[in-house]
Length: 182
Image (tube, rainbow, N blue to C red):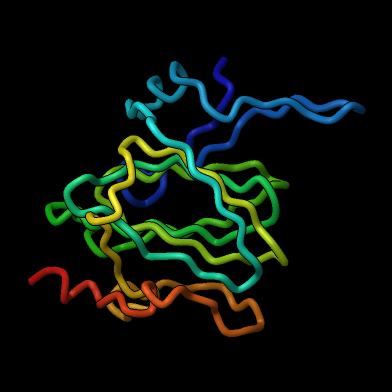
């Protein structure tokens, strides 16, 4: 038996992943990645870079993607809770412009797999969150693109955190998806 449950979402290739957690009075142990289990689920990506960020409540990061060097990502939260979003940018996909959103938390220990060809972003729901992710392509800063977090054509239902969202200046200037299609 594998160490993970892979749940398909409404968008092909996007999975919510739950690890088996072994706990006792000392704490817990879990695998966060196992190549054999992931390959068995059809996730064949070879990860080349791990990243981590820390953010406070109300911080919204995204929606980011790389143009010429797209990245698949395996994301999870090691402290706190976020609402994580993947937007399908694959032009030939029947779900182009659609999104999947999931609450990831350190408590649930769930993960989200986002294949190549998606924009990605997250909103911090807890007072603080630490977010980690594996990428199957190196980050190329000159290749980064983005979509507005509040693009009405996508219609992401971001949770209410009781305050204005905090975005970087770069994230505030991204265009709507329709402008990227031209």
